[in-house]
Length: 41
Image (cartoon, rainbow, N blue to C red; front, side, top):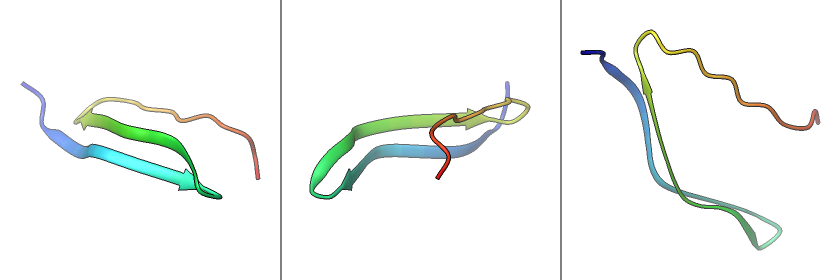
């Protein structure tokens, strides 16, 4: 059984009064590899 290192629960993010993420949940376990891709800025 792996150990949970990071947990995001019910996260909401808005830019310029527009919600872009609504109630997002994410769990990252020990020994997992995660990449987030998006525009450079």
